Structures are given as structure tokens and as C-alpha cells.
Length: 492
Image 1 (cartoon, rainbow, N blue to C red):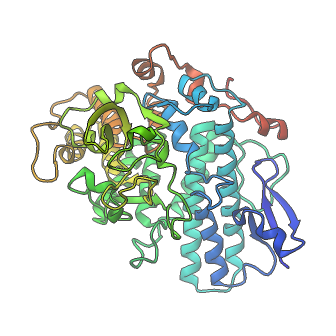
Image 2 (image 1 turned 135 degrees about the vertical axis):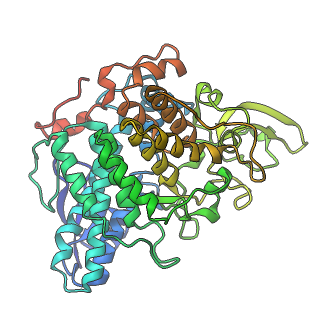
Image 3 (image 1 turned 60 degrees about the vertical axis):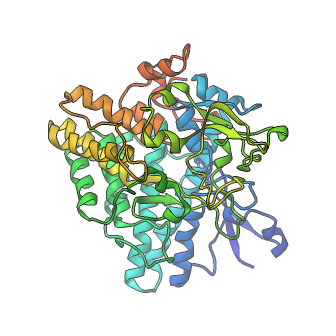
């Protein structure tokens, strides 16, 4: 019997050695909570499995006992703690608190985000430390290490933006009460990790590498890190490297972005895969968006199992031009019952539902789009705007605008190109464009925090809700502070 490490959701003591007394005992546990430490890390297959384990923690589990990093809480928090989403999920006070900015250190959603990120970081640390000692194909070894470093850098990028000063764990075994690193120290590690991933493959053989990190993903994520750090020059340079690679392009019609046939397609820079293995793994809670219909109102379109827990603010919905293609693709605003009666409803998010491929609407096998090519274009526009390169800023934001007026057949007389904007007007235009382009993709709180616009924009969408300066970071979970006295608190 092998010995395993159980990864507990605690930054202060992430590694606890366990000895499984029987195979039955092991199988009753969620297998994602274990990484073998004996009779393992011997060959290339073991190295590949170690890196695959990091990817596994990004999505949801088959049993539902443990959510993955991007299963729900992460993007739900980023939407609710902004001007993007409202919470309609009953008996969910933690989510209500995020939406009204009354959350504190006891918030369970934030604890889950913290725990799942550090679990995945720990698995990445083990892979990065163990793989160099394996006798195996050198090219594969370097690729796997690059993937692990990309994933660790990406995970720390989430965490430093959300929580600020946190433990910087980079070794397989860390002190029980690790010290806290400054944001500058954490960003230095993130940049080093992402640079270490820039030699990843440009792509993988068809069907063999869907969802794996690529060179383009590393460069695009690095550009976003530089953008967040207001290093406009490097943000522009890295974004342009992705653009000039000619490995990515926009789908001509926004509706094509979220079709199942587009998974890992030309616009996907980095996505997290869900919904495979015969449906055993559920999609990243698409049901949290779609509208729940009562049994007496069963839709001819078959969405009776969808939930509609988190919904767009009316401010977001009303910000779209009426003929913006993204508006009709993104939102569900009516349903047709089995008698053919059309009933208007408040807007719900529907863009992840590929009706042709999954007509029942009882979930989706779609991916979570962590980085799309349209974001690379907008990042490049933003960097150039800050560098006073107005023509380039206009050119690249208008590429995204142009797609928004194409309805699949013709260009509509809507969503006109931006012209002659001042630098300040362009800042506002890019922020608005991001809001419309990335609805429900987990970006909005990060965008408002990065641009210091929480206090001004949230009250416009949620009257009476007024964030303050402390909300540019989330509170560090109290459970973690009880376990690690070195952890600070972010003004809560």
C-alpha cells in the first residue's frame, strides 16, 4: 500500500502524512485529496500524472464533495462583489454579503477560494520540486515543469489580487505557520513562474492537449500581470507577442464563442475543462446563471432544471446597445411554454448554453474561459492608451467592437467604432467594453479593483450599496488567521 499526503485546506499546514490502512479506506475519500509520495515520481508517466493533478484541482469533482478552484465560488465572488451580478440564491447569506459588500472574515465563499487555491498551489509545488529528479525525456520534463509553473503563477495571481499579503509557499514542505510575503514579493514569483512557462508548446496535437497551458497562455497571462502592475510597456509588448503569433483570432460571430464545437478553438487562450468523462463531471455551475422555470411553466426549450441563482444587474443589461450582438447572445429575456405562449422575464445569463448541442439545458459540457483572445486585444488597447498611443488603442478596441455588430450574416447599424476619444474617455470605454464582453467570466471585481472604480460604479448598479477603500482587497478568512498568527487582516 502506498503512503499518501492528504491536502488539507489550510495554508498554515498544507501537508499531513497519512497511511491508508486499506484500499477501501482510500477509495472512500475523494481521490483528488491525495498525492502519492512513495513508489511515485519514478518516470515520465508519473510526472505527467503529477501535473495533471494540478489541472484536476482547477475544475469540479465528480462527487461534488469538493469544489475546484474555478467551479463556482471564484467567479461568483468576482461578479457579486461588483456592479455585474446580484444574488437570488436563497439561504446563501455568504453570497448576499458579497453582493452588498457586508462580507467579513467569516465568509464561507472566501474561505473556499483560499483553501482551493492553496491546495492546487501545494500540488504544483510538489510537481515542481519532484519532477527535476526523474529520469525521463528531457523535452517532456521541461514542458511539464513549464505547465506547473504557469499554473502556480496563475493561482498566485488570483490570490495576491484578492488578498494582498499572503504566505508565499513554493516548497513541498513548508513551516506550519509560514511567514507572509508582500505583494511585491508575490508578484516577483508570479512573473518568474510565467516567464519560466514562455517556452511551452505553441499548441498540442489535436485531441491530446485540450486545456493544457501553452506559450500563448503564458505570454497573455504575463501581459495581464504587467497590466495590473501598471507596467504598460511590458503589458503592451507581451500582448503584442500573442497577437503577432497569429495563433489566435476572434470568431466572426459572438454566438460562436460559446458553442461546444468552439472548445479550445481559435479564441481560447486558456480555458478550464469541465463536463467530460461521460458527464460524470458537471459543468462549472452553469445552472447558477440560467433561469429556473416552475413546473407549471415548463419551457419548450427544456431549461426546467436550471437555477438562475446569480443574475445580471439591470444596469449591466441596459448598458448594451439594443442591437449589440452580445446582448442577445448573453441574456435570456423571455421563454416560450409548451403552449407557445411567450413570457417576458428579467434578464438571466444564457451565453454558456449551446442549445443546439445540449437542448435540455440541464447543465453544459462547456469550458470556463479564463482567458480569451478578445481580452488580449483589450489589454493591448489599454496598455497603448496609457502609453499615449491613441491610434493603436482605438484600433484594437474597435476590433472587439466590430465583432459585436455582426449578427452572423451582416454588420448591423450598431456598436459603432470609437473615434477621437481622449485618454480618460478611452479608459472608461475599455472598462465598459470589458463589462459587456466578459459577462459572467469572473473578471469584473478584478477590473474595478484594478482601476479603482468600485466606489463610483457599484452604487450606480446597486443603489444603496457603497463600497469603501477596504473592499479593494477581500478579508483573509478568520479560520486561517486562527491557525497562522502571522497572517494580517485587510481592514475588516
